Length: 351
Image (cartoon, rainbow, N blue to C red; front, top):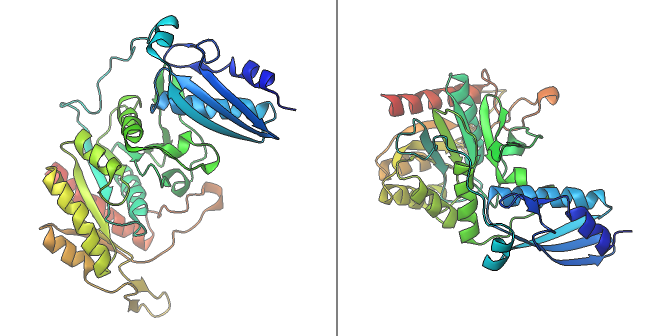
């Protein structure tokens, strides 16, 4: 049976990364509630809204489930200034390597966005990333759709990032380095954060991740023009942008708002990808325009840019031994379209 005593004793093994001391030693265990097998804990850390908090969150859940808790609910707050002082103060950051956000960074940021959800933006993101890697580019992807993270599942990733000397090393799959909020959330739990905390977390995705040398960093943005998109536009003043839409007139109309936001924040629009452009019968070769026609062309015309590609409705071939439900093989008809899109991106950026 789980008791408050066993919980507190177990939490002595969990360290506040910024103080290098147990969260019990720092006075960070604020509240423990037990109801049957359900445990709720309130924890104070030196800093919240960081990658280190995500590590602590994951470790606490694992430790308490190891003690017999059936489910674990967590709330976080920050230690007071006096508590920080008593714990020895914040340690200085040890990393002195080049930042991927530095003005002289060789990395090109490509934000993939849409006006609304359900248009296949994440599918486009992961396939553009993997195709660029097939073409010999050094590629990373940030699943910045904090509330609707899906990239790990789409790419068939089951492992978690490694932490070495206070640096987080992204998971690599199909030659692409991947980081996602999904790596730091237990059992597909919902993320219930307000804008400022999300902004802090996104900043950590750039500053505390050991990306190494990258040619391209793909950013799978949440749909629309909310807090996360605004924060990223501010962090990345020189980002490129790809707009994803379906052929439907409404989807294209809404996507135009995201494109206008990009223009107003001085981002360069690389072009439009029209997803679900049509359905092609394998039997007759006839094309059915399920979601209408012309949305991509109208969007490109309004934003004075090009259509990078029109991708039909389709399903990747599933390999049970190398499961990645959303990645098209290089020789798949849609995979060939993504290759054309990636080649156009390279020409536009590297010309």
